[in-house]
Image 1 (spheres, rainbow, N blue to C red):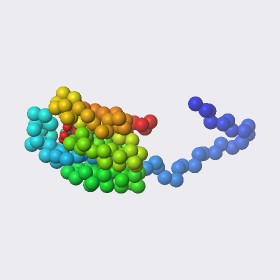
Image 2 (image 1 turned 180 degrees about the horizontal axis):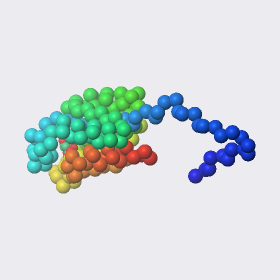
Image 3 (image 1 turned 90 degrees about the vertical axis):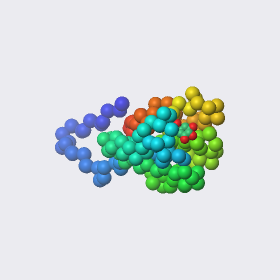
Image 4 (image 1 turned 180 degrees about the vertical axis):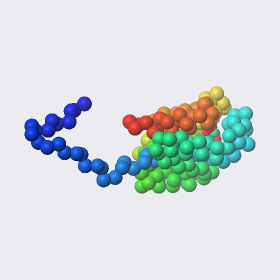
Length: 169
Ligand code: DQA
């Protein structure tokens, strides 16, 4: 670490000017793909009994604890998710957390949107996709994600958010 320069002998001490504005709150976008609006009633033996609203509220609260803003968006439409990713660039989101749900295994277009805006992202799956049907074993997102969390239930979102909110990430 470089040391701050020593003041010249005899020079009067000067207070550092307070910064004009505080750093903007870190913004994280959480994207949920198709059918995740059904959480709570959808195959609870696989996805648990929490609703999407429960998860989103918990993430917003967790974010506030870090002084960050967390926005959540769910859509059953590929184009709507793509457009939300495009908008995130201008809105200065620092990180995206995405559960692409069924689009994980099909969507080159959603992957291209994420690489296109260049916002780092973490892929989350509630279930362990590798322990399920073979068509769920391939993800179009994992190779371009910072990392992937799967099989830890909805806790995976919390862990992803905690990672995204570390100042060095
Ligand atoms: C999922 C796993 C996907 O295979 C599935 O299509 C989903 C949810 C998960 O969170 O475990 O909709 O992404």
